[in-house]
Structures are given as structure tokens and as C-alpha cells.
Image (cartoon, rainbow over all chains, first blue to last red; front, side, top):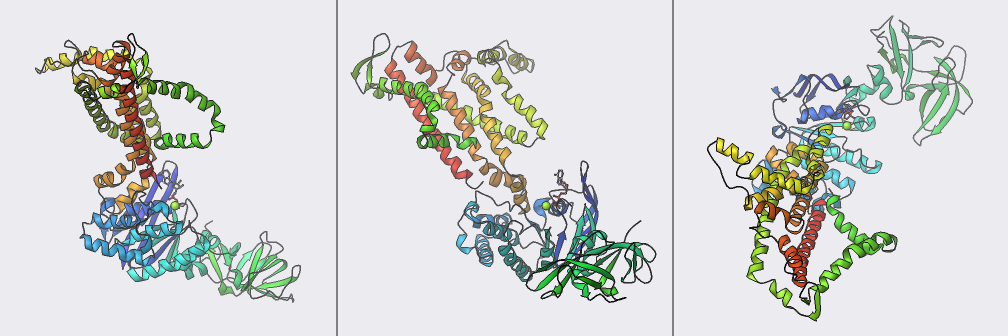
Length: 349
Length: 290
Ligand SMILES: Nc1ncnc2c1ncn2[C@@H]1O[C@H](COP(=O)(O)OP(=O)(O)O)[C@@H](O)[C@H]1O
Ligand SMILES: [Mg+2]
């Protein structure tokens, strides 16, 4: 069931087009991620949902009702700010209680709910502290608690974990996912970290330059990128540009490469092949899609990355193998992959 | 920042005297020595034609309790308090609006606020006499409406108007800097949590700008009873109302009672220091983590 329906939303700031006819449907109860490079309009979209910004054109509906007509303070939408925006003159518990006090709930209930949510985020012992007496990770959890305690229909999180160091971040990712599961609120999380989006979200919208490139599940996004931007942005990919034919992708200087049959036959297209789909083997006549020379081998514990230079291709090709690589730098190898392991993206001429 | 500076400067002075040689010398000559002199005058008898006779006495302080002077002090405090309150009520909305103007208009508005400071103080005060006298434009207007003429000049109201006019920028500037510094996302966070604009103002904007409010009030309150303004009560109040400033000046220049003048001056300084400490304390409390 669709909770939020964004339709044709555009927003310009002077010469900058922050959002360019964005259309998205966000479903009830899902964990939705907005992923894109810095400056692509993610925060602007959240600010429109929260009511701090109005789109130039387009509509936003919540449960079918016009959300844009409701002032910010009456929307059932809570935002966890990128900067946390905690009230510096209030204690942790006052910060968290603030939103409930605005609902004029009985004091006892407020106290109970604040205590419960502080327990959940592990800050019960810090209830009386002021924000400046907390660590970055603790402040972030206060901001989360303050937004969650309102039990909004929609919870927006703007780069919630970007200020945290790597170890705390992965802990908090688990925490967020558990929390979303528990409270059953629809989450929209903004991030420029694709691994974060991949690991957290049920569905991801990739934004670029104010436009939605693709909306898909993490797996489909990874395996079936539908635009050149997504193919290049998500994960490491080996990209080849050529002409789609019935047998594969015809690339100048490389010949016909294995590619899935697509609706783009005859047109120019981009082929994306994931490093882990590329097999390396001995050079025997007529075998393999490409020939390359090993430039570098790096071992990452579970996997090894092999960088190869391919004559006629100006970018390094990356292959990933499980465990230790069985090739050495300088060796000539044959590269191969199954046609169905590549993703073919049409390029508009 | 501005709000916390007095305390910081004092703290550093005690900590790093060596590096502060020149500044400390300046303070010694122009602040500490005169203050010490004033302090020493308070415990001696008056000389007949000014100056002091070096005979210790406590009666200068005792005179402070004289109802005659208490009345002057109470009257001054009343006018100063009214002026400060009005300055706050006028200054806060002004500062708030300026802080939310687009950058270019901000500069213009701030220049407009401080512009009167570049005109001679006496000329500005005389301008009020022109405005308020029985034949002046204000009374002409009232007459035309059938409401006047009203006696405006030489009243407490005229003094307050003059003081307010002279010291309003001292209220607006610290308020402006306090409001300007507030993170706009805090207001948005408040709205996001369900607060109407008025609630956001009372619960977020006002408490966080309190250091600026206190600084402005201390500036106006302190400047009003203690500085320069024996001119305003005299010109606009027609000399009917005596404020502490007039009293101190009269003790030195007319009554030639330096010891009692010094006691009065010291009392004003003491109030000033107390207020500054209260302000710095409040600023530090409110400013933590902001
Ligand atoms: N209030 C504003 N005034 C002018 N430009 C803005 C404003 N808000 C955002 N922008 C511009 O719009 C673009 C998108 O910004 P934003 O939504 O913050 O991106 P993101 O959150 O994806 O990094 C950027 O180029 C930014 O500079
Ligand atoms: Mg952003």
C-alpha cells in the first residue's frame, strides 16, 4: 500500500535545479533509501516532505491527501536532521519529551514513553544530561529517539550515520534496522553511502542531479542497473560501450563481448560486468571474451582483486575471486563471463 | 561570543599578565588608578572647596541611606527600568526582523540602527526639544486631531523618550547578534515536533537568545543611570527630575562634596559590576553547548 506519493516535484534555487520532476511512491512500512552523490537534491526532497520547503510544481500525497497543504507543525512526519538540531538548552529527556508535550498528552504518559524510548536507544542513564555533554554517537541516538517517540507515519533520516566512525556506524545500522522492525514506521533514509543504502533499505531510489535514475531493490539495482549513471555509481563495475547486436555488444577494438539480449538491439548501449562475475583462465586460442595482462593483485582476506589491462580498452578491468588469486602480476590471462551476468544499459544517442 | 567577553577578558588577564603588559599598563593608568582614588575619597571628610581632608570617617556612606538620596536613586532606577523595558519591547522585534532579512538588507538595516550614533549627542537631544515643545510638530498633530496640546516636554515621559532614543541601539545590536547566531534548524526541529510558531518562539528562540536579552538590558540599564545622561534629564526633563548622574555631577561640581560624590559613583560601579557578573553567569549557562 502506498503511503507517500510524490508526483512531478521540481524545485529550483536560482540557477540550480535541486529537484527535476521527481516522482516516487513510498510504501507503508518499508525502509526506503534515497541514494545519490552530494548535492543531488536528497535533503531538498526531505525538506519538502517535512514542510520546510515548497516545490515549484508537483504534488505530494500522504494516504491520498494533499500533504503540501498541511503546515510543517501538523504533519505526521518527523525528521532526524543531518546536524541533529538538538535543543542545547534542554536535557536529553526534555528534548525527547518536547514533541509529546506539543500533543498535550498526560504527563504520566509522556514520562513513560520518554523513559521507554531512552531505554530502547540505550540512553536511560544520560536522561538528565545536556546535549553538549554527550558523545557524537549519543547525540545521534537522542535525535533518533526524539523523532521516533512521536510515532510518526513517516520518519525521515538525513544522513543519520554520516558523522559516526566506521565501527559505531555499522552497529547503528543494525540498530536502525531493528528499530524499524520493532516500531513498524515507514523510514526514508538519505545517504550518499551506497553500502549503507544496500544493507539497510528494502528499496532504493538513486538520485542524480535532481532526477530519479532508478528505483529498485538493492539486489536488482546491483544486478540490473538501468541507466549508465547507476551502472557506474553502484558497486565497482567494468563498463564497456558499444553497439548491441543479436550476439552481444560490439565494442570498437575489442570485438563482440558477451551481453544479455536486450530491447536495445542495434542501438548503442553500455555493458556493466561486476568484478566477481569475471573468470580468469589460461590463454588458449579462441577461449574467453578478452585477453589481458595482470597489473596488480590485492588480497582482502575473503576476496582478492585482480586489476588487468586490456589492449584496446583505456580503463583497467577489475576481477574479483574468492580467496587467493591464482595469478601473478605480469601474467597473460583470458577473461570470460556469461552473457546473462552482464547488465546491458541503453544509451540514448 | 560578545555576551561572554567580559568574563573571558578578566580570566585571561589574571592568567597571562606577562603577555598583556601594554594593555595592563593602560588599564592601570586609566581605570585602576582613578577607581582607587574614588575609593579612597569615600572614607575621608570633604574639603571646604572640593578635594578631601585626610580624616577618616564613615559618614559618607551613612548619607547614602538619607531618604532624600534614596528617592533620587529610586527615581533613577524607575526611569532606567522603564527605559530598559521599552527598549527590550521595541528592540527585540526589530532585532528579530533584521536577523531574518536577506543578507544585503541586513547591512542596510544595521547601518540605519547605528546611524544616529554618528550625529552629535547634544544635537540629537535638542531635536527632541523641537519635536516635543508645545508648538512642536507632535503637539500640532495632536491639536489637529483635537487631542492637544499636551504638555510633553519637561516630563518623565520626555526623559524616557530621550533615553530610549539614545540607547536603543545598545539593545538592538546584542539582540541582533544573539538571534542571528541561532541555528535556523532548531526552529525547524521545533516545528517538526509539532510546535506552532508562537510556541517555537517561547520555547526555543527566546531562551536561546536570552544572553543577548541580558546583555542588551545591562547595557541600557547601566548606561541610562550612570553615563552621560545628566544631559537628557536636564534638557528634556527641565531639571525637575534629578537622576543619579546629575547627583554625582552636582556633588563634584556644585556642592564640592567629593567624598559623597565618590560614594555615589562607587555605588553605581558596584551595581554595574554586579549586573555584568549576573549577565556573564546567565550567558554562560544559556550558551553552553549552543
Ligand atoms: N536554500 C537553498 N538555497 C540555494 N541553493 C540551495 C538551497 N538548498 C539547496 N540548494 C542547492 O540545491 C542542490 C541540492 O541540495 P541538497 O538537497 O542539499 O543536496 P544533498 O542533500 O543531496 O547533498 C545543491 O546544489 C544545493 O546547493
Ligand atoms: Mg544533504
